[in-house]
Length: 222
Image (cartoon, rainbow, N blue to C red; front, side, top):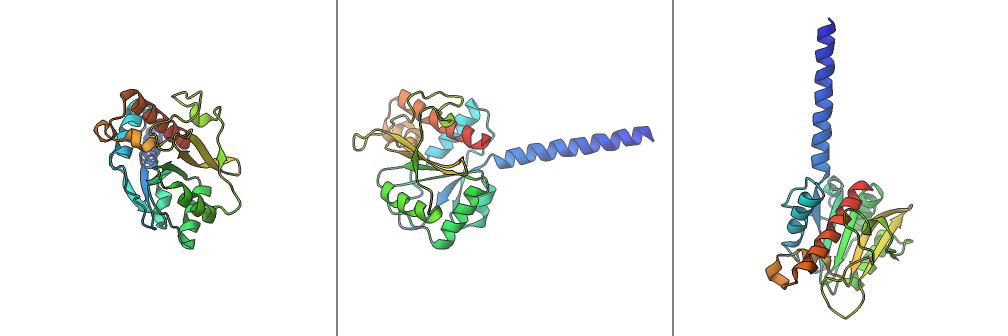
């Protein structure tokens, strides 16, 4: 009787561990946000796979290196703890899409937007549909997102030059939680791409990948 109880307990313990591991593996997935408006949401196709590979190696994540794309209005958005967004042109969220993205973010999701030159005026407009009363705030250099495995004492690194402006990290905070990180005039995703695409020096690519890993690490922890 005692032996049977022990085996039953052991079986339950193994099932709990298995489910826990399975959930962690599933929960560590990242998707590319697909949006309407004509902007190239599919830009920088090698960027996210390279970042994921770097993160898996250096911060011990277990993310699939072949990220899927998910439409902003799709209910499956809630299956991904982090979604990544970039592009050069117009962005448009319908009322239902904005509502879906808002509910995703306030439910624990995280959005990283990488300004790929030309995105800024559109994404700022559309984010007002998502959170009408919340403004983008510049994130100070001492914020934890810059101080994860990799330390960036001066904040967001400059990766790709456009208008000779300083790189800035902006965020949307909901009830004190950072739900969206927006890298502006940095172009982190260019730095994640294959080295042959932009011919960035290796030290610049490394900074981009390290900062990207910090964003992933921060999002998973918060």
